[in-house]
Amino acid sequence: MRWLFVLLAAAVVAAVAAVLIVLPGDPPPARVSQKATPSPTVTEPTPKVPEFTDDCGTYETEEKYPYAVTGYWIMPQSNRCTWRKQLQEIHSVGGDTVIRIGYGLQYRAVDDEGRVLAKDGTRDSLYEDCVEDGLSCHDAAERDLRRAHPDNRIARTYVYRTDQAFGPDLFRCSEIERSVAAGKRVYYRVLTPMDGSDPSSCDLGTPKPYDLIIIAGAAEDSLTELLALGDQFGIRVFPALPLAPRDPKTPIRANPDHEKTLRTLTRRILQDYGVRFADRTSLGGVYQPFEVQMAASLAGNPTLQVYAEQHRIVEQELPGKPILISPYLDARKRVAFGQTPAQVAEGFKALVKTGVGIIAPQDSRGTGKVGLFWPDQRDDEVDERLRPVVGETTYGTAYHGSTRDYYREMALAREEMLRAGHEVELWANVESFEPSGDKPCAPQGTRGKTDKKRLDQAVTMAGRYVQKIVSYMWSDFMTCGSPSLEQEVMKDWDRPIAVDAIRRGHDARDGVEVRGYHLKDGTVTVTWPGGAAEMVIATTGLLDEDPLEELPDGMQTAWVPFDWAQVPAGEWVRIGVRLPSGQETTEPLRVRLAA
Image (cartoon, rainbow, N blue to C red):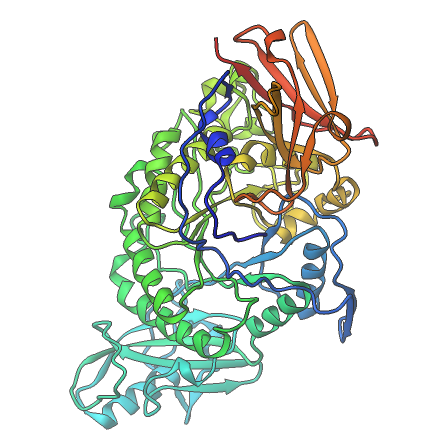
């Protein structure tokens, strides 16, 4: 993907402002200055060699089937060869970004022997092997604290599990902090004053209460391995920040009672990253995994304070590396918390102010919370795959707006934030699953397989407004079923996808500009009630395969002549693209002239 330090081209702003209506004789839109791009660093990782071999086998690093989606979430894997295979597959379909699912910080009780207890009150087997000098890590840490001063004590105990290993920069006070090796596990004993001050000096002589954080880590660092794979395949990696503990009364919110401890854990981990990985091009940034709903009320949500705290630490310890978040949408009318596009735009602004660099809202079509439809389809029955969520109804009855409406409003909100000096990108996270299926794709839940046609439709709806398209997720959802969605993409990767069409003249000729993927050698088709026209791009128009604009990687712009006078005002027009192979857009664009 190109990260450009340029003025936003007039065409981009026109695409945002035009919505779905093609207006005759629109004046040139005002340009918006963009100071810098906050997304991953300008220097992109590139594949090192055409193929390479290790214990997992031989892998090609060639991009074979470049699709519109260029980033995916991945799950932690105990088998490193699985990761290796996944990154090779992701890169082969054009992926240049992977986002790690992460783990959460948890507050835990301990028994009389200092053993960590699970939530059901039994001993947690994951932490039983954390033993020093015959004592539990908790009791050994408290012993060491009291050697420094008899009134020192451990007030609270937290645990954090991960498949990562850390270096010595995780610690600040070697007198009381250390790692404990136990088989394939390495435990890290972190101690910090309960007030969250976490001083750089090791002052143990003043008695105070401490928080103990026991990290159950790995002997081999998964992030080091992922970054090495990123170097090989030209893929940026976004590891997850520690997930905040949830409010027990309102689990969709972070618990502010543990904010100080979370801040310490975040700082320690990022200090370690800063020493080991700050110069790695394949470290694209970090992922904030605590999800929130995009809503007008977000400004008062305590989770945003947690966001801001963690994000300040990222700016301090990993300068230049952006924070990526992926909030979700809910457009349903029949639930009290459903939000309109305008309300979601307000939520977008609130999130920008926490310091995030990339906002990748979930399109929420996979969960059924938003529908993919055009304005002239509001009275149509919803896709039957949405009925488990909204019932047998129409789009207009079920939803406040379509995916396109929400991304349009967020794009306008982003422009406002750019003008105010905030650097942020808008990505689209298109969900590659259905609310339910005959054979669920994931080990838990009912979510089932979707198909490439529906994924193309999601790209069509969001693609005109964003700087990148990513998808939740590769593991399970792209690889389940027969054929899998991955196989469908590989077979049909070069099908054209149009995301935008506007009326635009060229050399005193009226015409239409189409933006999308795989437009080369295509024919633009325009149909309306009572008429149709076809224009071959190569012989009648123009094709820009690499527009110097802030567009997702792989997007192209085509212009063809078309006399809009032949279309009655107010009529809906369908615009698509067909290739010589017979492949054509599965989701035509729908626009209309203003009356």
